[in-house]
Image (cartoon, rainbow, N blue to C red; front, side, top):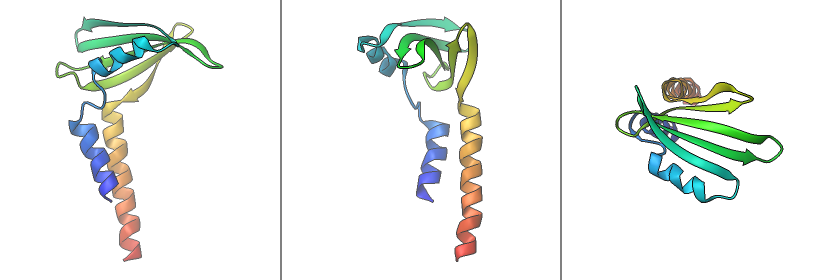
Length: 108
């Protein structure tokens, strides 16, 4: 049960990854660039990398004004798809916790 509570806590109060952590990716062989810019929501980290068997792809990490990761988008062939949303992750973690709490009570 503690793992579920930690996951919920992390989704609510942890930055998960910071813009500074992503800068390290620029040093990796399979990355072409890591660029930062601001938009109306906060800071965006844009990264282009080569993924084996998938080709070049661009990722966009959206941070809020506290540098907390909010969303991740992946661009494939000019189409952006969301691959992470903090709000969805919070709700999913809560759902997992409540579902497993019911299962735990059945055991007792």
